[in-house]
Length: 334
Ligand SMILES: [Zn+2]
View: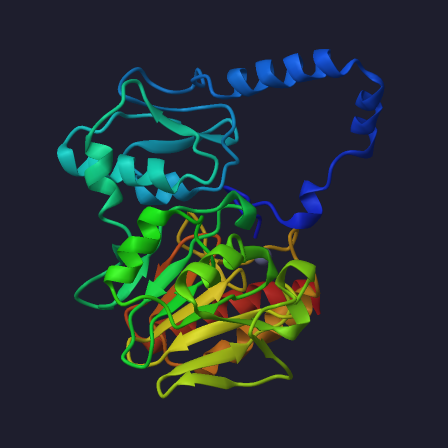
């Protein structure tokens, strides 16, 4: 299934070699042009409705604001736009949370608002305090992770940061107040964002599969080798799920029935299961094999890096959905 609200992986962000012809241009003119382009990029898209909030032209279509505040943000012409202004305080707070989470800072208000200081204190955001207490959405998505979602989990044997939010001192202080971080688990190489800053600030151990270690992650403290599974606490398991990348790993939190999937498997805007073929960096058939592996684990939540969250009534519903998804996809990539 094609990913609507598509995300960007490294391969697709390489500079166009033809752009180097610009070296021959006058440097001053180039600076003026880039400054003008930056200002133009921050202007309001005409697709926004009039009112307090708007999205600018630098939106990377990562989908974050649309799932965080669906009443306000919609996809119009391959980018997000404000299609309805918040109509109550709850919607306004959600729109401000989306503003702080936008990886390119592309959401703005017409006038500065003090309310933002109050909203900053809310992160990380509890996902569902009743059903999965202690599991939070970090917000502050990082452009270096192509806008991926990161999570924070409080745990008696040590708290865990799952993938990397954008580093901000405010978020670091808020996480510290919840007990700090013992492990920073990196699902795969695309979503490592500001991992160095977090590991220094929190003095946490980073975990990444050796198949995904690159120059920027060469000093990660724990490199997983082989096919696992690995336990990082009595009830927290790491499941090897290669395919999207060679070192993709999911984190399974058994008592809460939560699976953190990185980019291995996620929900689409249409509430179906989905994965990305165009951003696959290893093997689609191997990725499908790794998705089949998930039938052996009892979970009701998929918390992904890119794409939408998915919840199931129970394990049986999860397995039916997985079987139906695999039945559609496997024949295409046999
Ligand atoms: Zn990825």
